[in-house]
Length: 133
Image 1 (spheres, rainbow, N blue to C red):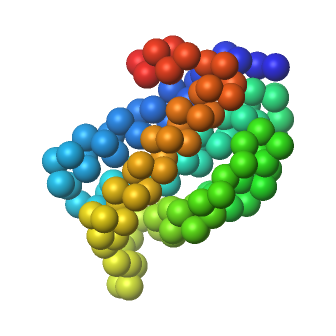
Image 2 (image 1 turned 90 degrees about the vertical axis):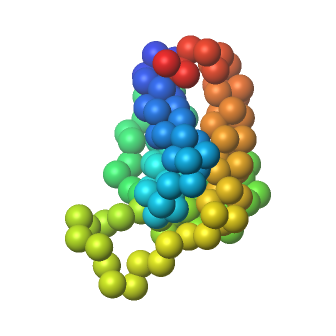
């Protein structure tokens, strides 16, 4: 098991999550908050793979990632993973049909993401203080 590698991933996830929280509190643009939330969830889930020294699959599909780590954590809120997967930006230019998520939607995903982050740290027996730096 590679706790050090998992901590590195969780530290990076914390950076995205804390940014999302700051932006949410400032009532910033929801599309920008959404991107931060997507990366938080993605990197948090990939921390299980890092912990096991497994290959980190290059995917941004959160439902696919949840299947890769289902032996570690059961996620019942697949609808939120589906919503957050759509937050990933594939290209640098803005698509015409990209909608801004509502603040209510962002709050729901933010609450889920915070809870997921804490659960993963707990399951990997990593103290929050060790990654919130």
